[in-house]
Length: 109
Image (cartoon, rainbow, N blue to C red; front, side, top):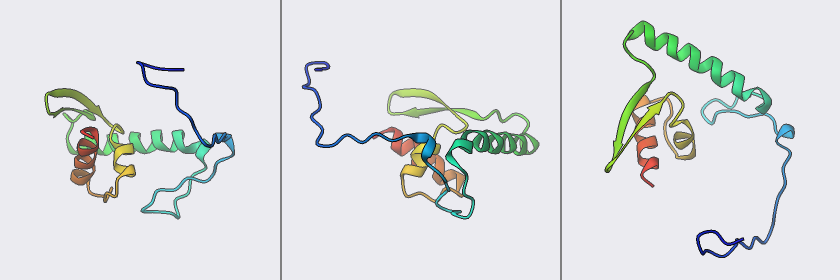
């Protein structure tokens, strides 16, 4: 099927994967902290909740979101929004400033 005048993709291989069979998932910096993929959503939500509580104790006005500007585009960045960008780049994810920079850089690509 052509989209916007572009020819349909012609793949040499198509791989089907049952995501329920994937396990475990672990962060690169802590491979011992494996989490079964089926539990990743709950573990993430728990981690974000803990992070938000710690942030609120340090700064009650912090809300877990910020306005970012890249070029002429302005958008809201919420907790977790740059997580994938940081993981897909070779970034030290324990450094929040580098984590945000990686996400902003990635967003411009």
